[in-house]
Length: 620
Image (cartoon, rainbow, N blue to C red; front, side):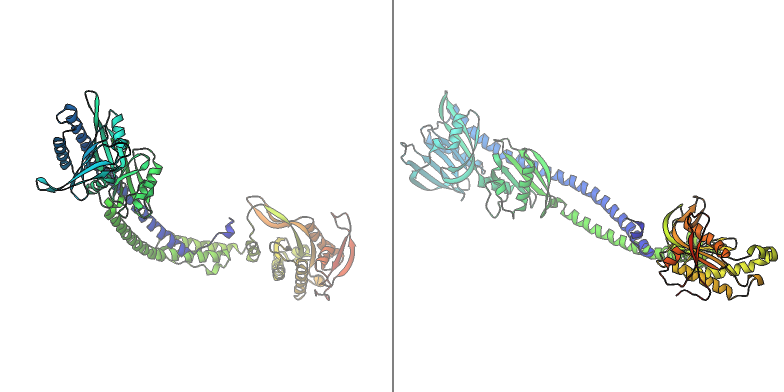
């Protein structure tokens, strides 16, 4: 962007803005550093608390699932050792009932026989205990079902009723039975249907052998509903969630179902459940089983999400704990501190601005005004204004001294010469450009003889001539180029654009001639011819001519040389003003000029048509 098009602001506003920016940015930077340090420390503390919470939940869940495994192993060992036969109904029922009552998290303890029979103890959702026995049957036939219901009482159970009916449950076709029968290791299975009907559960099954012969499969089941209740009872932070996932992110349990319903898949939770949405997003970004990440949520802010493996069938435990759970109060206090710091900073800024305007901005504004006065050469307007600040006071004193020096210097370089150059934006370096200009040379006839005759007394006459010449030139918008002895050189259409520059030069020449005739003659022999003027128009190189150390704003070229030589042509023809044909053409017929024919001019190969302005003829 050019410097001429840069935006401009007042000094007072700039100083005010800079001070305000400095104070507020310093306060903001201090607060930012403090906030980041505090936030990092808070994040570390929150991460540690989150890790402890996640570890506690994982250990508790693993402990409960380990009890399931140990319960199944107890039954398998009892049957394997022959301490109780699987067909011993009374002892078998006592064993299952005792173990079931000792483990509240277990929903089922059962045993499937190779011939299709099933016996098990079931902790019903209403708190009662059921003893269920399913008999064998031919393929396609219903199986006999016996259901004994018991109500727990302190230290014992109370028999309520026995129900005999039929069951369509096929033990040997159930997933837990098939996996347990075909595996020598404990097998975990997720099932939806159990002997009591639809009851999504995780089931641990173990093969039972006696002397190398399959006796059946023992099963221990934990209802997914009960597993979710177990997760809810764990000591997890408020507004947090725990998820137990199977393969392919199938949800086995969650500490807080959405709207009372547990989604079948992690991606199936409703959008309103923003915490589950954050967990699903983190899970997509981290496909590995074990990870720990900080997930951003628009509604909850940062959320710590941890995934750890459970020692059962590649199941995973996911915990989601919003950062605000631990750091909510800290963040609120941080915001309060921000407002307090901003208030203090604003107060400090206002105070600083007031003092800055009084001590700095206003004195600088006054100095700027005085500098503009110096630029306009209005030197009488420059005054020393004392200020409190030493540097600005010295600046004002130096400015006053500089204006006094320029006033003295102006006696050697007229201000009327300098102003057009400054206004025209002339840069102080060598260079120029070809410009169509009009050049005027004017001198005093017989100045050499007058100098010999009058000596130093000729100076008032020369000064009077130069003074009126400058006045006439400036009145027509011309620029005084230089003084050459008793002659003055002036140009038009540089540095300022003047389309009618030829006409202006002619009017100035006529004005100089008339002014000289309005005064008493310098000597009797110089009464008829008071001045000689040559005017020419054409292309010349105009600009700063010279070296880097010293420059002169002038015009050079053939057009200038011809104007200078036309002064001698005027003497040869006995007239006061001679102008070239190019100048006359430039006036567009707006002056009355008399032709003097053509004349040979040194440096020109062809004769030059010349014209004069008679005293009785004036520009139209």
